[in-house]
Image 1: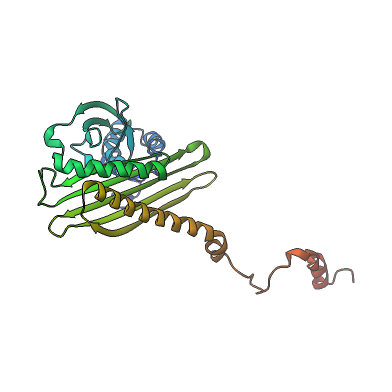
Image 2: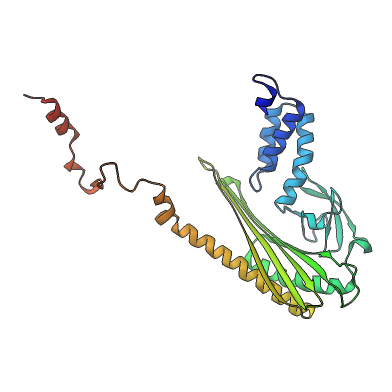
Length: 306
């Protein structure tokens, strides 16, 4: 941007806002407020900052699947595109309520019952709620501070068997420990398409893991993986168990692969980053450093003492 504007030419408010939005949107998991404080100080212009924050915070909250406590303390809601009714209102399918969100403060401010047209039919809700129950059990076991939700993505008005419909499962877990200079998050989204004619359920998932360590440095992990699977269509309860087991299998497998990778870091990855031998092509004898005498060698070369 600075090149386009010319060397030494001040940035326009629009350019400043774009830069601020980039920094806010790319803040590590759970650290957007720390970044926002610095961005605001650097800008020195509240109007530009507020415009940037109004654009960046909603997208950040949805991208990071931020979970917020509902005003009546009946549970947590995940801020995601699947529950978004408009920019500030989000559906919690488990409690059948709609909450108004203050994206910048990351709090829920209002709560109302969901309207009938915002909720799935009784037939679809039977499948959705059964999956929500099984998924909640799994998340409670696997993620100490995890939150999950099941949304109907299509076919929510179907009244009975005979048509296709779809769900989205969202799982969000975060570990915040800024006093220990580390934060991290686990996010996974699983979509499933129920094909009534084929009696078949196609499942696709994406898992994202972020970690940030910043004690006397700045080390970040940002990794993701896609998964596919399928199962047969059964009763709501049996479908829920089958889908949850598939999600459990893939997420456990991915977590195990990450743990295995870290076990190999010191023995493989880090060693590959270093020169295996010095330029002399011989190992330095750390166990017997007296074998090397810099003083003796220098005296010999300079013919000292003769």
